[in-house]
Image 1 (tube, rainbow, N blue to C red):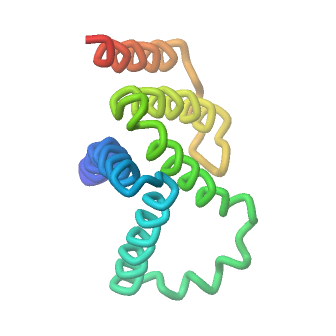
Image 2 (cartoon, rainbow, N blue to C red; image 1 turned 180 degrees about the vertical axis):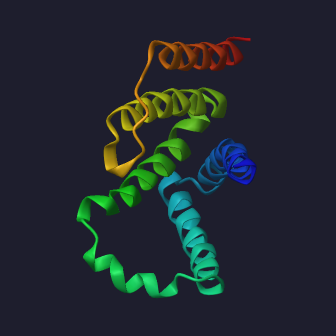
Length: 145
């Protein structure tokens, strides 16, 4: 369990770094969209390398059998990268990531509560809703200070 928490903590640390780096690249080259394409090209190469080095390469043959809605994650990550790359230089990385976090908390609560997309069902109790509210307020305070 600790290893999963550590991996996700590292991923969380990477999100604002990704936002800042790609926003700076987009600003430098004058095109947030081109910066996003470059990011995805590098991400594709890195992911392909990991896929080639670890078991799972044969899973590619099963993709055509997957329900098409499961592939929408690609559209959502493209939307995230394109929007954060465009918005962060104008709105600030902290503000942009703040609203991303709030959106994640809201969608996570709904996905877990209803068990959407095959997720484990975790009902939204008053205690959990209060915890999410405290998290949103805490993140908001960091942006107001």
